[in-house]
Length: 193
Image (cartoon, rainbow, N blue to C red; front, side):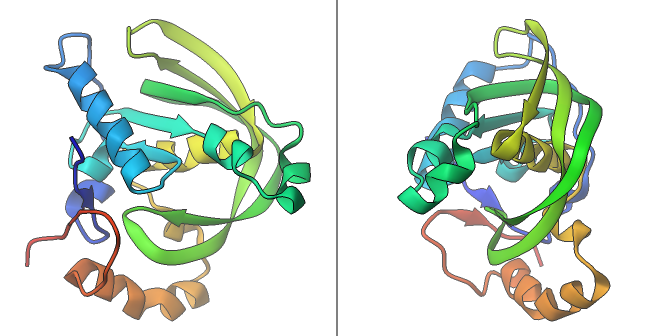
């Protein structure tokens, strides 16, 4: 089932999500619905707060970026190790490498893309959909998507990394999103007024 994406301005996007355990009701159905929602909206990552669930869960599919890259971009992803993966109760253990710039967007903040600086490498501890514990290190675009989605479960958005000047420049666009005065090709859930 395709779920609506929570729009910028909704309080759940600013809330630190809570951990879950294997007794979480219908988790496998929620994960299936999140994958379906992710692909319907042409995303590469989706966090539970974006579908109105305040839990520490997100999905990442960097395969799409790497496999669908045009010839010019393929060179940028030649060393990439793309994934399609579920992260439950993740915890970032360390960030390494230099920070690098990439033009990010977000399904909850449609039609706004901005350059964001993030570390090259992230080591993260998490549970998979079977609640088996893992510790892995990711880099490149996959690491970036993980950090973007991790921010969601910490109540943080990519626009928080922007300078005050950039934030002022996009303020009216953000207000339009929160009021539902935009059109996108996927279902959205706007803040109650």
